[in-house]
Length: 360
Image (cartoon, rainbow, N blue to C red; front, top):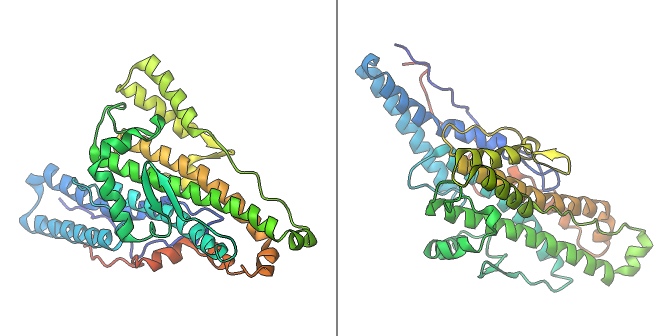
C-alpha cells in the first residue's frame, strides 16, 4: 500500500509586523507544528498498517521520522531559551509555546530599549519584584537570567503557582489534570506577561515626565495628551465563568472544561475576537483541553497588555517631532523593528532542509 508522505515547506514565514500592528502567532506556529507533527503521524501509520508495509518502506519512513526529529531538536536548540523540550515530546505544543515566548520577548525587547533611551534624560529603575522574585528587566532578555529565574521556579513550583491569580490556574487539578512541568511554564509565561505590563506602564509614566520636563516645547508644538490606558478585567471574567461552571457541572468534568473553553472562544476585547488576535486557528494534532484553555487565557491576557502598548506607540508616532526635538529620535528605530528582525537576531533559520520522498 503506497503512502503519500506530508509535504514539508522549504522556508518559514517571517512576519514583518511591528510592535504597533501586533504580530500574530498562527502562521509561524502552524508552520512549525505541521513539521513537528509529522513523526507522530508516521508512527501511527506504521502501527496501523504494520501488516501491509514492506521492510524497505518501513526503513524509508523511519528515516523520515529521524530526519524530522533531528531537525526539530536542532531548531529547539537554536530557539533556546524560548523553546523548552518537554519530558514527553509534543513538537506541536513545544513549537506553539516557543512562538508565544518569542512574541512575549518581542513585546518586552522594544519597550525596554526605548526605556534605555529615555533613561539618558530621566532616571529609570529597571528593577521590579514579581511573585517575590527580584527581576532586572535589562537582564531578563539574556539566556542566563531567564535560566536563573526558571531554576527558582522549578525549585519551588507549588509556592509560585499558589501566587498566580486563581482564574489563571489551569494545571492544579481544577480542570482535571495536575502537571508540575506545565505549572512551571504557566508561572514563567505569567511572569513575562507581568513584565510586559510593567514596561508598558513604565513608558506611560515616563511619557508624562517627559511632557512635564519639556512642557514649553510640548505646548509650542501643540501636541496631544497621552492616550487613556486600556483596561479589561479578564481575571474577574474568568473567575465568574468558573463559578458558574462549577455550580452547573461540578469541577473536573468535561462539561466544566467545555463551558470555560466555549466562553473563551466567544470572547471579544474591544470588538476583536480570538481568531483575529492570534491570526487564525492553530492546528495541533495532540492537545489537551486544559492546555488549550491555558493557551487561550494567555492569548487574551497578552493581547490586553499589548493593545495598551499599541495605543501608546501609535501616540508616540503622532508626536515624533517632539522626541526628535529633545534628542530621542532613535526611539523610532525600535518602534519600526519587525518580528522578523528579532528572529534573525536570535539566529532562527529561514530555510528548511529536509528531503522527504513523495511516497513509500
